[in-house]
Amino acid sequence: MKERGVDEYSGEELDALAETGRYREWIAEQFRPYLHGKIMEIGAGIGTMATKWINYADELHLVEPANNLFPALHEKFQTCASVHLHNGDLENILSGNPVLAKEAFDAIILINVLEHIQDDNCILKTIYRMLKPVGHLLVFVPAMPSLYGSLDRKFGHYRRYTKAGLEGVVKKAGYEIICSHYFDIFGVFPWWLINRVLQSSTLNPSMAKIYDGLVVPFARHAEKVITPPFGKNLVMVGCKTGK
View 1 (cartoon, one colour):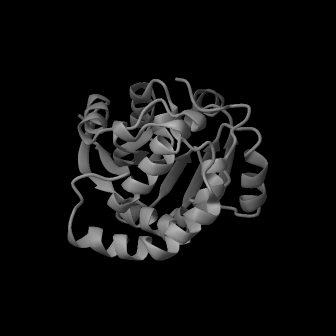
View 2 (cartoon, helix red, strand yellow):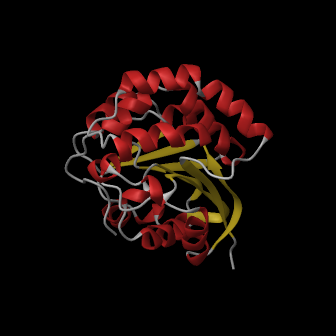
View 3 (spheres, rainbow, N blue to C red):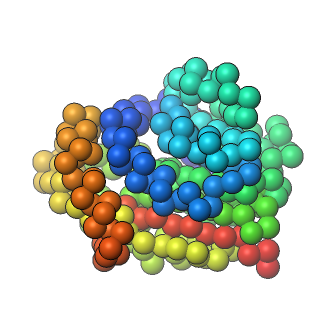
């Protein structure tokens, strides 16, 4: 399976995410019912989201393939006894630590990662084998192929997903879908403007911070009341059926 930048990754997405505390909390909220026991996050970056998982995990494994991001991840979690850090491609990590490769985890998380992997079905099947019976796959990805533009290309996205497309690849890998829904409907227009119309080559952390402060609180409340018919992202929870 081909994963994003094993040697280096610009991390611009991560810098913007680091400025959006409310948005990160909103993402984490989607997955809390499934967080317990032994958890892995693949593509942990600099640990921006991992701080949300640590209090729910008896044991937390963080995988980051990019060599330039791993030192920051190590610095953040090196003193946490319950956290295990892995730098490298998932296949290499599993080959060097086979105990992780089969029925080891209660939940495995991919936040803005699956779109970076050329063969998404392959990694989903690998994760399926890594999960315990009735373990959960927790996925957050960019949605709506019509929004694919300059920033997607810069960040190395192979695709943006439709809801049916994501459901299809997850089912094909053997999972039962527990929930699947669009996320952040209000982010569609700004992303379309920046990514398709203006064809920006940068993601401005300051603008992300403004969106986080002004829009996210309202959007988070609104999407609890009404499930959006479309959105900038998709949330997916799959379960290992054991069949």
